[in-house]
Every structure is written in C-alpha cells, then in structure tokens.
Amino acid sequence: MNNLFRSAARCLRSGSAVCVPRQTDGRSQWASVRLLCSAADLQKNLGEMVKKDKVVVFMKGTPAQPMCGFSNAVVQILRMHGVDNYAAYNVLEDQDLRQGVKDFSNWPTIPQVYFNGEFVGGCDILLQMHQNGDLVEELKKLGIRSAVLDAEKESK
Amino acid sequence: MLPSVLRCVRPISSHPALTRPFAHFRPHMDPDPSRPVQRAITTKLTDALKPDHLEVHNESHMHAVPPGSESHFRVLVVSSKFEGLPLIQRHRLVNETLKEELSSCVHALAIQAKTPEQWQSNPTMAKSPPCMGGSKGDHTVEEKLKAGRE
Image 1 (cartoon, each protein chain N blue to C red):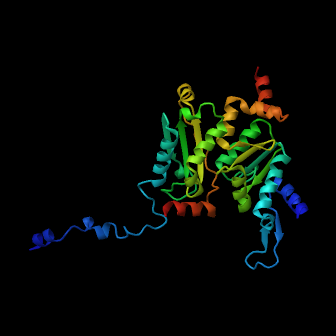
Image 2 (tube, rainbow over the protein chains, first blue to last red):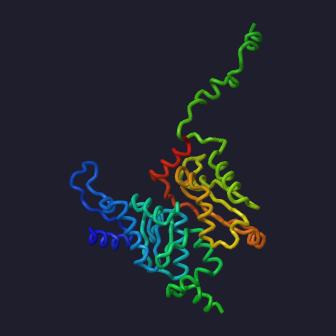
Image 3 (cartoon, rainbow over the protein chains, first blue to last red):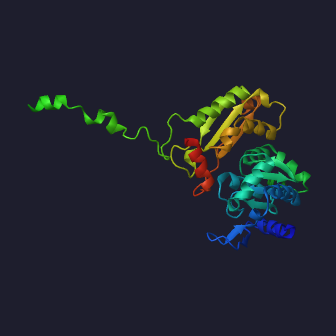
C-alpha cells in the first residue's frame, strides 16, 4: 500500500491523475488511488507530501493549465520568482484530496502553498508577500534565489 | 358600452397571480434578492472584528456560476484586532468567523486584512484575477450553491 501511494504521489507531481482499475464497480472501471486509503491515511500522507518538496502547491488544474484564476495567480507569482521545480497537486482530479488538504491545513479554500512543510497561505497571502518583498526572503531561507533579484540587478 | 366594460376589468399587468405566479416556489436558479449570505458575512465580520472599515463584495458574477449566486466573495477588513498578527493569523481569524458560510455556500473567499495604520498608508483594495472557469461543471460548487439557497 505504501509503495503504491508513493508512486501515486510521484505521478501526481506531474499533474496527472493516478488511477487503478477497480474490479467490481459497474459504473466506472477506474477510481483514484486515494479511495483505497482511509481518511486517516490521507492525513498522514499529506504530512509527508508537504515535506517532500521545498515548495508544494495544492491547486485547481496544473501549472501548465490552471483551472482557476487564484491558482493561476500562484503559478504566475512562482514563475516570476523563477521557482519552476515545485510539487503541484491538482485537487480537481481527486475530491478526497481536495477535502483532505482543507482538513489538513485547517484552511477552507484552494490554492494552498507550503514552504518546507509549513503552510504559508493562499493566493492573497502569496501575492502580498510578493508585493512587500517577503517572498524573496522566504525563498532565500529555502535556498532559492529569486529571479526577481537578478531582474533588479540587470535593470541597474 | 365598451368604455364601462373596460373600466370594470382589472388591468392584467397588476394582477398578482399573473405577475408572480410562482412566488411561493423558488427554483434553484432563482437568486434571493435579500442577499442573505452577503448580509451574514457583513454582520459576522462586524461583530467579531469591530472593523474601522469593512467591504464585502460578491464577486460571483465574475465566475462560472449562475447569475445571482452568492458563492465567491472578496472582503476587505480594517481592524485593530489584526495588530501584531502575521498575515496567516489574520486570515485564519476571518476564516474562523465565517466558518459556517465557508463550509456551506461560500466557495471562494479573497481576504485583505489590514490594521488601521496599514489602511491609512495604502487605502486600496486588491482586485481578483480573471476566472479560468474552474467552477463550471464542478459538482461541489453546484452543491454549495444549492446549500446557499435552502
């Protein structure tokens, strides 16, 4: 089960849904692997997921194709700072994940951003951090040099 | 003879049964003009945070939901209760205050939480990004819209 979940988590990083065949359901042959986990398992695995990568985003859609203006704003901000290598989980493909992450973070909306396993906030907070310079500092703490600094350097 | 007949007949346009035949029945697509969700949000934020300035905007019309929905909101709260609190704690305060709405009919809530000093130095409200259609065909949003109308 753990190996299955780990491989599922890896697949989810690329934004694709992970499916396993269900043997008995006549309506649908496929179901998300999350359905095989209990809610408690999901909470435990979310704890691992948010720590596995420096930057983790739970969003609607994918970075290549966001399905929500607020999720897109998070993607654009991270892109502006040159943060390309982050884990993005598409909650639209998994209703258990969608509710599970809200319970895990105790936060009612999507998108949700984690830095080094710590919940940062949603789109509004990330935007304000970007505007007031805090985001550059927080990325620095993660060992990520913001591209915005290089852009500022070039303009001088 | 004709003029007296016309005088006796009540004008059709004023007859209540014809102007509002289904007044007792509110189909799920019919918005509530009294805007109960917006009023609830305004009341709860006012009571809990005693704001110096409060704006509650229904932005549902900017999203892929039926006209008259109360599902997407933007709030600007200026309150001294935010002093000394980091952004995330301020937002959590607002979320907690609107817990009931967020777990039932409100699908999206954009928050700006400022102290009176911050508001004085920058009295502007942020704008929401354009919708990318994520709510369209999203059954959880449909359920929330139904919950708001019941």
